[in-house]
Amino acid sequence: MSFDVSTIKADFPILAQQVNGQPLVYLDNGATTQKPNAVIDAITHYYRNDNSNVHRGAHTLSDRATSVFEQARKDVKGFLNANSSDEIIWTKGTTEAVNLVAFSWGLQNLRMGDQVLVSHMEHHANIVPWQMVCEKTGAELVPMPVNDDGDIDLDQLNGLLSENVKFVSVAHVSNALGTVNPVQDIINLAHKVGALVMIDGAQAVAHWDIDVQRLDCDFYAFSGHKLYGPTGIGVLYGKADLLNLMTPFMGGGEMIETVTFEKTTFNTLPYKFEPGTPNIAGAVGLSAAINYLNSLDREAVASHEEDVMDYALAKAKQTKGLRIVGNAKHRAGVLSFVIEGTHPHDVGTLLDQQGVAVRTGNHCAMPIMERMGVPGTVRASFALYNSREDVDALFNAIEKIRMFF
Ligand code: PMP
Image (cartoon, rainbow, N blue to C red; front, side, top):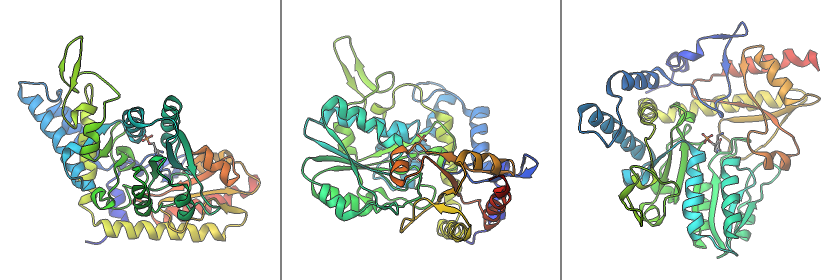
């Protein structure tokens, strides 16, 4: 199978529009990706034909809704190569998945004197929940240092690891800098001191195959909307033996076995962590996104994305007054930069006027912005439908705005 970016682009109807009189060049994929027809059609089909509540009905539509919903879980299991569908918990997204682990596992297991390590480049979603739980338990949140290039130094990490460290939570790919972290090394090192490891895969899953069994991570989280699927659906993968020992942090219907006023006993996995009516259409849409990706040659997709990234980096390096923020050894999907004498927000607005959509600001990662000495950046982030032409459009637009500064 080969890869033709114009064929791929045609699968995404939103991209065929003009914005401010210019063809849309969508480079805000780190925030959310666009959706192919396959995903839009699957959601529409579900609402037109199968909509009902899951696991409840003694009727045909409910059976159908349950069956597509559980099939979606199996698709995610296959996508992550989990050992069992019971290890796949539906959440709203990465944020809820981290909160689930921080509150369920953390409140139960963390004590005064314990440490939780997160890297200096984490998204707030992988800092704040841990901070909240550390405050409640007396544990300490310790940032793993990041060097000037935006890489984690494994020797420094090793120096931080001790038997006090009970949990390590780290991004697979940084949304602010694009750094691909050496998660396999981090997992191996953390396991040596007996710490559990969670990987925030929000920015990674769209780029390569993930194999949670090979990684041997204890938890892995991602959001559907960054994987060409809908918003409001995400996944927590957890090893079954750990999930079985954890007490749910949210209660309600569906997650119980029996309820009396004296005591509630919980349902089995995965339902014990899924109170209330889930986002059924979201799961259907996410499974369509996974099937769409699986229908492509993912190695060809990855090399196309690398080509676009390298092309963008080379152009950035040739652009006068542009400073790339983060020069990680291994990078995926994200180019963060500032332009001398300009504010990122102004650059973003002027690029938008030329049809180029980027994100500006701190990217919900204030600690790493401070570490890099910038209040924020302009971030171009790439997906499989972006091409070298999109990169040219970005840099042509940057040249045009020089006159304003
Ligand atoms: N972690 C990372 C690395 C992210 O990029 C994001 C989204 N920008 C999140 C967590 C949070 O994801 P969501 O908002 O979908 O819960």
